[in-house]
Image 1 (tube, rainbow, N blue to C red):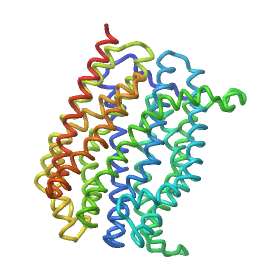
Image 2: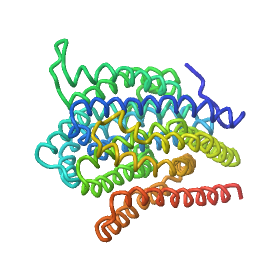
Image 3: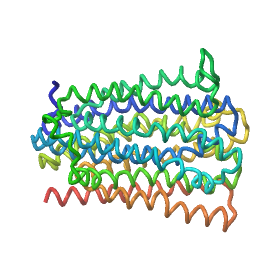
Image 4: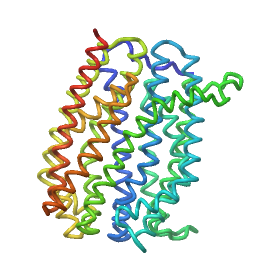
Length: 448
């Protein structure tokens, strides 16, 4: 049995580095995983690449539920550990895994029937719609595996250990390089599955993750069954996990809604524009990866120190995480501004895809640090059990403001697609300012 990491004492910069660096490395490889999927989809054709781009918002139904419940579980388990209530933390850990499996089974049942009309809303029809469903159906079948991976990682993250998830993401990226071409094109007894092979490769990797992360979570000592008592589903604790997790899920879901909105308006400019946006997002994710682990660190630091009522440590960890984010994202913007077109040509030879995607990347480079401020501030608030702010900010940032601005600029005033990209930039920085002010005011009230 390993002792959990105590984040309520000791050097804050050291804790941030120990949490953020493994998380960032792991998430970098996770992004490389997605880059490999996008590259191999491009070998199938532009329609397959566009289908993956269009599927991303629907995939976010799984990601949003898993990530949100994981965030809520991390906050609750971390608070119990910060308050030195280890038995309660162990009970919550078992309940979180059970709750995740239940949500995964619901996605198996209802996911495919929701996906088809959503793809239709984004402009997919006939063969294009069938290609999208070929990819998403296996993802929904594997949903329980995705949820279990998220729950085991929540336990480890609450305990201050982000290294196992990093290791899994590195392993998964390596496996995906082997499984994608094997499943897509067939061989060695495997039939060629086309775009469905990309999805089945992902499901296979998640199965490996369940075994590895489950083993690591068990070694923390937090998966104790209490002689079977902890295995009995507790509606009260399910409600607590849902109360913290579903607002975070809705926040993640607003990202998916934002993609629905963008794809809905981008599709007015053709399949090449949809494919360009999907490819450019992969490049954006690579640029953000060195800093994205900072929101993981901010969440874990806030959760444990909120339980210990060390609010000054929460403020310092938030400020330092934002400072480190500036040091990472501002230099990353330079190569994107200079080499946007070559980055796009790595994924596609279609000149329209390259041109549209490069234009998006040059504008998006100016928004990278704004994303860091939003992520760190909302993660700190979630760790303090204030999850609803992220929901309201996400609804405005991802849905209300884009839907109005995109409609006004592209359909009413007939501007070209660049108006969508400039609107995104303005919305990101406005949201960053709102998140900073609200987080500072919340911490000031705690300290008072």
